[in-house]
Image (cartoon, rainbow, N blue to C red):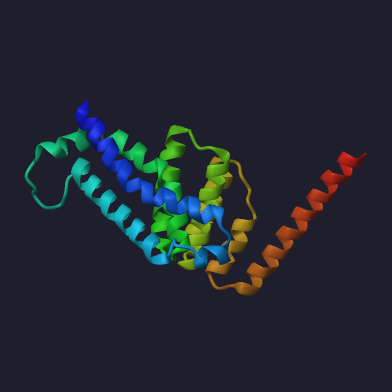
Length: 206
């Protein structure tokens, strides 16, 4: 019991800087953020520390390629793998936000994928968080010019979750470098969006 509490407090210690950075980013505008004490270097350190922590935890409960001595501490992670994964997933959204802000798009994409895999497998994804992670995932993949994965996300959402988010197709074109087609798709999406909004408003006024 005491080991569990100790490990929980230790993990919380790693999570606090990332969560605090997320709150500062959310509480300030982009111009204010650039002038605030939350510098990109601190965010990069937070994300890098998280990556190293996740690698160590993974090696602890899954094992490593090299033959390592089976220390007593490793057995905690082996027997509490699900608890460790659940803890990591609770802090993936702050990690994603911090990684995006600091241009660490690979980390943002990886954590977005892990979040979706974990929450969808348990059926516990909240709508607002789910939408945020999808948007962040696609945004990261645009920066990485990974149009194929964006297409896969669109197909996955449409076939599995019955969500036909056409704006993702525009993002796919942007990631592939087809900027003219992307601009056309974005324009079409915005036209349809505002058209539907106007129809809804008209119905409310009647």
